Image: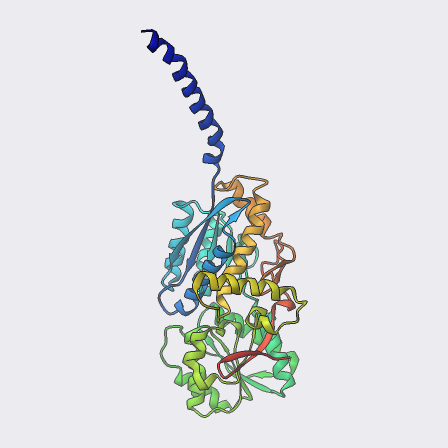
Length: 391
């Protein structure tokens, strides 16, 4: 009996110690991790872009996986290149997984579909496809790929220097094709260049012979496409088959190895605008984008076992940098995982100032959801399968 009595104080002390330890651990257990919903196209016609985006996100996580010691969880979904699936994925990530932000997706139509869900649920969207919505419709999104007018103006400047007077256009029959065509119309006329065609095709089409025959018949000095990825090679293949000898231009959405492989000799000499990351080693040593781009390449090598050869993976990396920077500032105002944090995060993203990425030095405002300026563009030429900086 005496032994049992003597054990009671020890048991009480052990219980108190356990309670104290649990109490001390409670704040850490309750502290929510940041959650990022990542949507890309790992299958379907946009997968030639979506897979590089996925590899870029892997590089981003290899570069930095926490915010002040707090883990960032990434939940990835494949939208199969379908805008409806992209929207469903966004709703699942927001309603079920309670993500703080969405990064995605590979195609402009899918990004616009996600933007509608983001607006409805008041969840920030960092679009890694070129998509833009004006006013309140786009109040919960920012877009990382350089805007079509900024990049088209670089192409038109190059055309003017080369003496181009007429240009034929062929692009996708979707939002991206519209963006490039509208930008071309606005830039070409002041430069004294006439746009003589507006041909379109779907991303899943296997032939553009009819459209290209119409363009070739007009004998333009140059042809510009508003396309992307592997499907973007079709017009160049068809132009080469028809013996077209004029100058060929493209947009930054073409900069990936699958496009180069499929296009082959038909895309040799192509001129296109792109982000500085593509020719990072050719940039001046004092260019701030050079250092971040080289850091990206190292992280990509670590995560994927090879060096990057495309422009798209770097957009995912930049989206991650923007999120990390904004989330750190937003966490001073609200706890991750709450509606209040999503509002604070949106406000922090849209007030980003001079954040150096691989494609641009980003500056956002609530009324300017493209963060890029002239520092985000260079002109490159495809020479023997390699992109070379054009002075």
